[in-house]
Amino acid sequence: MNEETKAPAARALADQRWVGGRAARVLLCVSGVSFMIMLDANVVAVSLPAIARGLGSSFADIEWVVSSYLLAFAACLMPMGALADRFGRRRLLLLGLALFTFASLLCGMAPNADALNAARALQGVGAALQLSAALAVLGHEFRGANRARAFAFWGTVIGVAVAVGPLVGGAITASAGWRWVFFINVPIGAGLLALGVSAVEESSDPDAQRMDLAGMVLFGSGLFSLIWGMIDANVDGWGGHATLSRLALGAALLVAYVVAELVQVRPMVDFALFRQRTFLGSSIAMLGFAASAQVMLTYLPLYLQNAFGFGAAAAGLRMMPFALPLFIFPRVAAALATRVSGRGLLTAGLLVTAAGNAVTAWLVLDHAGYLAVAAGMALTGCGAGLLNGETAKVSMSVIPPERAGMASGIGATLRFTGLVTGITALGAVLIDQTRQQFAAGIAAAGTGVPRPHAMVSHIVAGDMAPMLTGLAPSAAQTLQRIARDSFAGGFSTVLAGAAGIALVAALASWALISAVDTSPHTHHHPGSNS
Image (cartoon, rainbow, N blue to C red; front, side, top):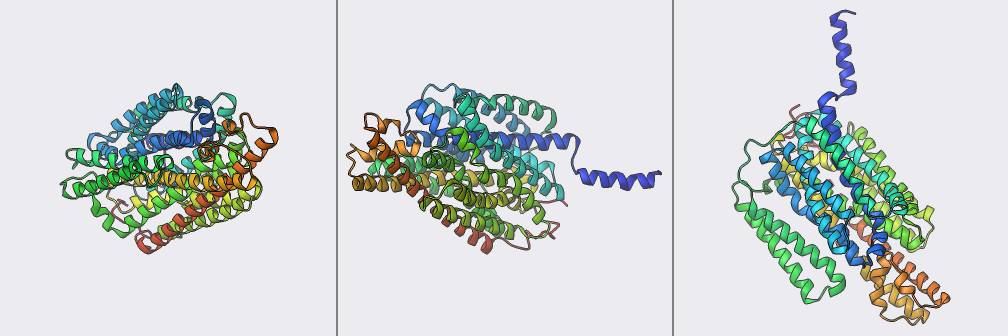
């Protein structure tokens, strides 16, 4: 075979492989970082009832196990994106990996709920460091058609983490105890550190200037105050002075943050980006995806354990109808992206998510069996799978490569802000509706139970043992039935609310995102050098 014949064959083979060598190791490292973060979130979610029992915690306590992590994560993502642009994405990636791995060790060793929540917050800071830097590395390393392939691969890896997370979490919790769901991150983190050191090259934004310290403080403290108010409202009451004060302070701090960013020469967030309709629409889609689909990774394991009485391992296995589509459908989205615009894919994914949540809500309210509920879970998972990689790809498609750190920080912040506010707001709905239905059920059954309202937090947390102590077997059985029915009614309302969120986000995505900017036939845009 002569050289003229060999060259096209080599080019065809390279195109088929599309990535190799150092770039392949970079893609593996970046995707592995996201895998570890998502694995941790899903492993913890299925272990929440075991954590509540092990530490004697209420629902508010275990809500903080999730929210302290997500809150630190969301509050730090944009600052960390700016840090990555200025001080180097490789440097920040390795620092974040080291911090996340160390915090995971502290989580597994935590002696009480307060120590666990503090370690989870530190873990969230490490996750923000590594994820914002990792996505910026991905956007910088891959351009043109390879960028779409890279983000599709990234989305698929996240889907794998989501798919195996409940299984791993359930199996570890049942066999070794909940502490090992955190210890598992230590060897994974060490391996990714070694890969990052050997593969990732340093990159930064040459135009980056001083840090926006005012923006960091105002955004982080404002978001913390809002979430603190919403979580503790379940105890203090929504009309209580403490709740209203925290919510008002959070709103004021976030308004001050926006003002501070608008007067900055080089702000942490350039709000001019949101004047691009496609970026704004994809941002709303990101929020809707997180608050209507990703939030179910926290609440579905609670439902499966509380309503059906499954153990942690069984609940993890029965999460598969929701989790598997998150692995499969990013590939479907990547195939469709060659024929369908990003606008169409995001809208379709949100509509499917809305339909899945609505169907599941009806089935839960009707006290349907697991197999019927699993069908609704699978439909929601299909919508979430379509959205998983596509939301990030569409938002990055209109951003210049030199602002990759800021863009990835904004996108990831929106995703996790939507997730933490969705968990918090829907958690408040779950507590309120369960409380109302439990009180009504107790009254109708004529079962004398002291302080029924105080029991609801333990019902939702999956720790019903304190409620049943000292009761006659018949009374305990009745109380268990009422508790499970009440939780199912509250969870049905949560699902209906999530369906509404997804529907609103779908309408906004269709109205705002440009079909031309996101067309599969568009070969040049600000986010690409192709």
